[in-house]
Length: 187
Image (cartoon, rainbow, N blue to C red; front, side, top):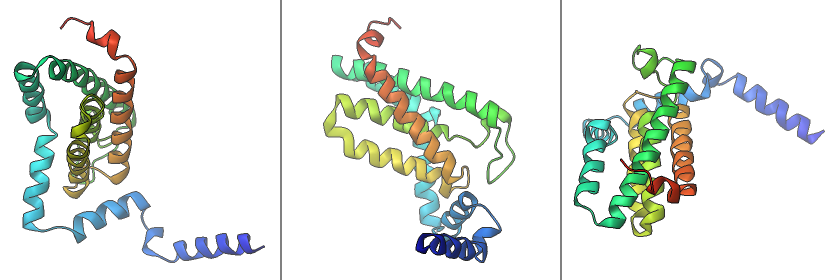
């Protein structure tokens, strides 16, 4: 009986709050944008979003591969498989789901769900941190900030970023599971 009363009270409470007018995902995303907004945060979050874009991440991968020792080159190769797999999966899901971005209309292939920035950042971080454990904290802090920046800037809902993160980690995990085979692939 106490359990039933608890759930009834919870439903009654939620029905009487502003959350009943919009879903939790939209509400949290909007609160992040409105409550944390400042000119300084805008610049910082734009910078992190740029780091997660392919215009910056691709040259980083090429630079690591070109300038790194053999282990870094192998790690970069595996990261490229991971990021590529995460990106391809995101595109397929975007084409199927076609969720409108919170800030604007977008083409189907660039729709909101899931976040490709989050997927790519976490796919890269997973592989690199497994092969270079000393980089784990900075990589995951950077990936998390890239993912957060997408909601902060109004490009994604929180759920887009969460699912993008899960896809990125999954892609990284699958690559690491098959790393010996993938390292034999000639590019």
